[in-house]
Length: 321
Ligand SMILES: [Zn+2]
Image (cartoon, rainbow, N blue to C red; front, side):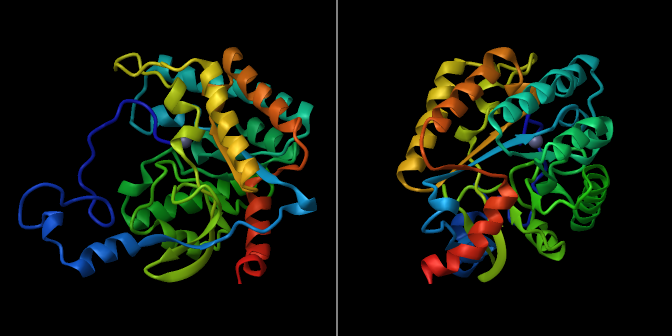
């Protein structure tokens, strides 16, 4: 996800907003076909929530960790050892704590690792993969993919996939974009690469099929949400007013309510965390309490994003016709 001090970005064109306000291209001047084309570029299609989860489970739980480490600092060209140290903490303290916790509860999870983060911490990638967790794409250097030229985005995505394949021993099948956003070319690249799923967009709580310009793509979307992410609650930038304003116990309550809702609706509970954020002692305990809460319920299927994407792709058509 996006982190750190926001840097003003040039209007990228394509599917991002370029026409707010006044002027001849103001969006209120757009004809219907134009605003419809903008909306339809990437859209939620067929719902993919199955009628039942494996073994008759009531809910699917997808825990994920975006292993940004130093890359959200490097992405902006910043060289501060203090900022880099905050990322390094994710590898030295965060990842070992997370792996121990998941191991203790026998829970598989998905780890989205930028290529540069993987090269800085190859042992982490190997430990994650060796423990049976999924390793997925998260950009090269946590670049703002939605602002890249198509050729650059394609080249960086392939380069990152090659690094992850080499270190994890198998090619990644899923993407979580670093910007939690798409450029005009992202979905095209996802389709070219034959990826199974994306997990960056927010049209639903439940899995759905991505539709591009009205055409079903076969690509599964496992949607994220800021409220199911640790960074908005705990993020901090010393030179900006951004501070952690939310008590860990309150974050635990929000996530518990999200899980309880998903359980009641027989749906998906998907959570995004970061080793350098959730890995702190006062926060990892919140995750453990949440896991204990979920473990206490019958019929909870803990799975990687890949397992869930494969399952819903296979079972949704029977469920929804
Ligand atoms: Zn990230």
